[in-house]
Length: 239
Image (cartoon, rainbow, N blue to C red):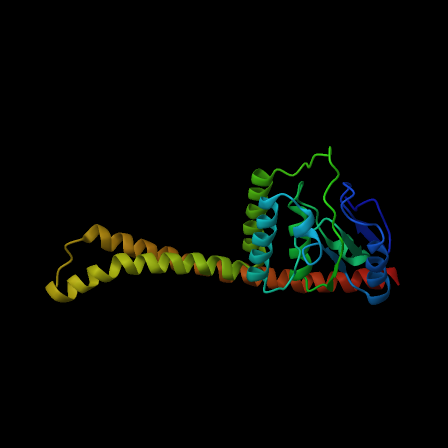
């Protein structure tokens, strides 16, 4: 999407006339003068919930915002907005992998993970004109966004992701294993041997899953270090 374009500042905006063009001036200024890597046009803090008549869209925006802020410990108010400005560094280091409405989520997580400078400004939102149709399917595209969040959660926060799965395996193993252990203490026998085997398998899976998370977390940390070095080398070349 950005491969063939070189600029100091990039503007992304939906083509449905729901965002006012005058807000772009401040967004560009923040990128060029304040060195912000991504400026987010925040609809949800202004007129979105009044103008937008699609209730499930409102719920979806809140759900995605809550998940992203919880997983990535951020405080972004509008994750799904289609009105953004980007710096040259952001554009040239962002791998465009999504093909649909998931791209806004991917952009936000990329900026948060790489500790890029992000700023939000409230922008006015007006509902699309009558007669125009949205390409967004609330259910199918909403599911795609949620799946994307889970994939990015796994890729960017592997220790937390696999740690939660490991904890789940461990909890289920305890549920099955503790009664068997109590019976063994009381009778010195294991009458439910299959249950004991199941508990052991779950404990093993718990340990293996946690180890996967630890190994992948080391890989992700190394990738972040390489990313910072890449930014430095890219800026040195431009100078």
